[in-house]
Length: 100
Image 1 (tube, rainbow, N blue to C red):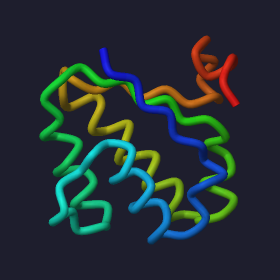
Image 2: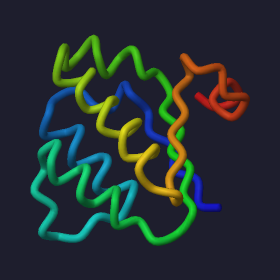
Image 3: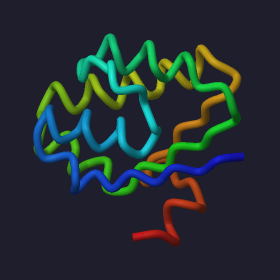
Image 4: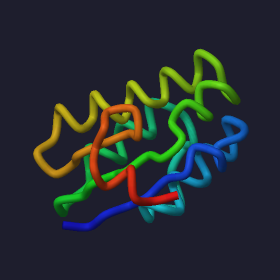
């Protein structure tokens, strides 16, 4: 299983959030950098992938309701596809506790 670690402290703006996620998940160059495009690209992940989000609260602190929506898109996409697992430090996932 591929593991991708996202540090919420790096997602300081909408643009930076999408660029960071796109880089970490190797999204195609045509990635649109919005929530719909995020959902579409997550749905196309073709190998089992675990996304670990450390400092998820920092995403909401920096981006407000957009940060909440971004996290929700990640969670919804994980439920819709059998290839994706998303875990935040707030869910108590053991992997997030040991990484900073």
